Length: 286
Image 1 (cartoon, rainbow, N blue to C red):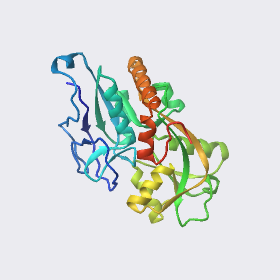
Image 2 (tube, rainbow, N blue to C red):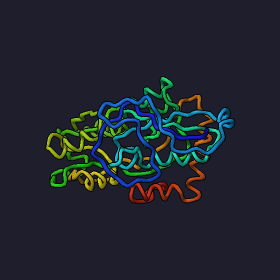
Image 3 (cartoon, helix red, strand yellow):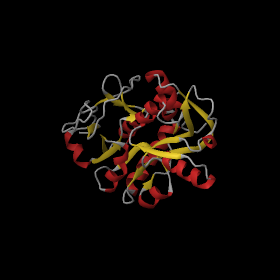
Image 4 (tube, rainbow, N blue to C red):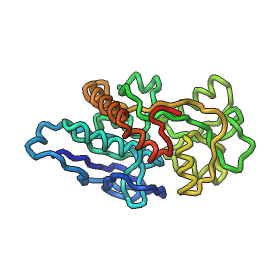
């Protein structure tokens, strides 16, 4: 039976709310819920056909506004989630299952075969490329910028962060960007690592940290839904392309994902998803 399911290993309660697309129920909504059950959201083939269908477990998160998050109805949704659902519809030989976890656990879960690929706005860096396989067709292209409190007029770019606290998520590409910039420019930024994006928002608002790195669409969402009181400053630190990450032995799945993403781009579906969830068409860059 062709279906897409959602499995939650660590599902953290969020205060985020957003509009609903074609959503899947999560298996839990308490701060430390673990799920032993799954929820079927689509069924398109006969039981006999299911024997030929390959199951694929897709790792994602619940803490990235507009990308992969829990909406006000308790559903897992967002740009990456809805894109995975769309790809699932177009690959009848595969059955996709979404498995949620903390961002810091995604790469380890991929490496230890607990998931088959990651859908979480993953960017290429040398460390990841040495261990994993990226698909070829980027599905999002967006600028990363420094974010600060909206009342902070002293910080106008990353160069103004000498001796100040910059919060980044551990193992994220934002952390790699900050570390590289610090080393190459001798900026003297105090990089502080956190495990959840919510910490950065709350810490900046409360004055416990000075800045973080994020995207304009995430900040717009947080300002609207959580009164984050943030703004972006300075030039873009990177024009980031995002991909799915797979194990190196998943070349066949990589090819299928690329074919599906190309088709979703060509018929305008990706542009529609990007506009719906991110506020603009980032599928071709800005």
